[in-house]
Image 1 (tube, rainbow, N blue to C red):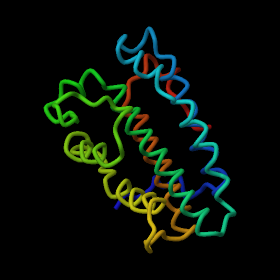
Image 2: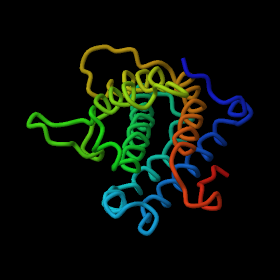
Image 3: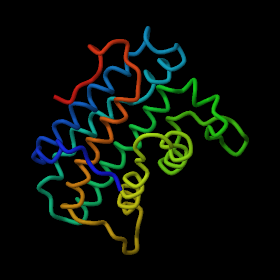
Length: 197
């Protein structure tokens, strides 16, 4: 089980959402315009990606703080799950040169490499379990929890969707998750490293 960073317990739900939004928006803005810093292929991949949608999704989190319906809870999980998927895609895109050379890189049925922006959460999660989360923090339990709740949007039969309280608890874990992703990607100088405040 992933334990959120201790300081996240000091933040109100509104502050958590604000910090997630600020850090996500700053990360996406930096990597959207990474020409001159990242390799030409990586910069091209990132500039073509809809990173601004990740920023927009992060600004939507606060909408669910005072909701009460099951429909809103399903959408809240979907919102958070989309942000997790986006962070994993961002990470693989930044490390695209390494990813495409990896023996376990995700391929289609014909054996052709699948670029990060064409991947879904399950193959992403499996790749990260096998190749990335072998050292340091293992985020698989967090991603699996979100994936199960997020997938309730496709359900016609009953599923456990948790509660708004459990969703709010995962906001603390999510801030820790994006902090960890952000700390593992290269920036040209500390001055460029995105902040959450």
